[in-house]
Length: 285
Length: 291
Image 1 (tube, helix red, strand yellow):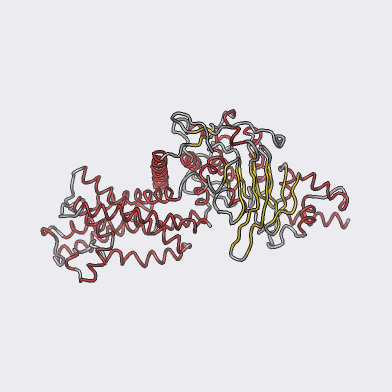
Image 2 (cartoon, one colour):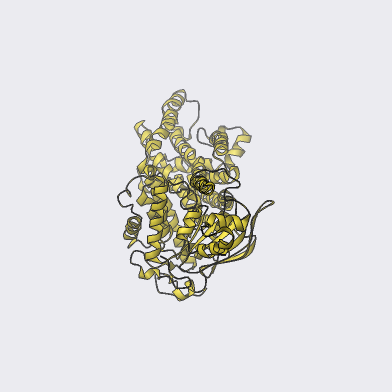
């Protein structure tokens, strides 16, 4: 049944079913192309998963709907929170809630990587020619894809509630990029915690513990200038504030520091990828 | 390694470079978990084309050895060469020429069978032209064409294993590494998985390295085996050679189980009380001995 030991096995090129194994070159260009290909692949997987099971998309729409419908409507009526240019509070709030729902998805994304570890899927992914950083970048952008789907739901909801949003396609595209970058960073934060906590339960606990502080210490609900001084300092260190600032500028047209926002989000994402890629081997051990 | 460059597509592994010499060569392999030495100076040599079995009870160090071979763990001492490629200096290249099926049944349950295979085709940079055909032929080889559109959640254990084999095939591996390929499967699924592995070997002629603690499977399907116990290899040879060595002492009907006990002084399930087929066989042998 077997070839005699020592004899050359039939080269796979001679086997009709499977193509020849290729070792691609290791040039910098090839490395960048491979990274892009991994990101596209893992985003494709995420889209397929969303397609197979859309329940999460709907159940996760409930919370932002409540924030906009109840909290948003009430606070619009009492005029308690000053808004730039006196825009309705609901319009001011909508980008904040959009960022929040993206945050909620991303901050628990590490659970998926722990689930994949427990199921043995992660091990197999790590034995493909995919560097750890490419794997993490791919996962981070996949979280971005999921968040964008969620953001679209919140955006439609806001439009129904009468928030006047931009119709400029460039600005909408910019908003998508901001949501992807923000989610990429927070999913990296989550995957880093996963690499430290190593268990689903602990990650759930830590995720629950940090989500609300991240949310309340950002400019998602109220402008920075009405915060107490100490909170302003924290808010300036919180990438969520920059995400919200950019989204408000792009979607509602409030004054924003887009250059700084993008710089912070890109920098945070790169740092996040580096940190979680360094911690990933702890999960595969 | 310096492979000739081809314009465009990439560098094809010249067969004489990738396959010359041994399929696997390990020397002085060591791995420790804290105080515990899981792999203790292991030397292994596997020839191209053979099916090699690494046998031993749970905790013998088989999986740790495999994890070093597939570049998941870095050996604390020693060297590994897979098809002439060093696992420590060229891990990405090693990953391109091996197919790996881990011990756990591990396909993504939320994707369909076809998507699971396509994912691996993409991760191994199979060009878009021809990817679809490759995925379909891998699924067909494993008899999964009909189930390919279903989510893996609905698969049986044997089907998941076959799907994993299909995933491991998309990069046309020269070396297929199977860690306990039939553990947890019922006897019919085990036979079925082995039939598929055998057919693969016959058509693709690849080298297979597998670990198992089912001695009957090793006896049937392996050209050569290494008996591993307590982190080190106690004996190596073909099942028949090993049994022949014992014939004098144990008589003509020595099984690989007996061989294992002779060389290691241990039994196959000395640290787990796992029941199943081995217990049945032992009971049957005991019954035979008692008359």
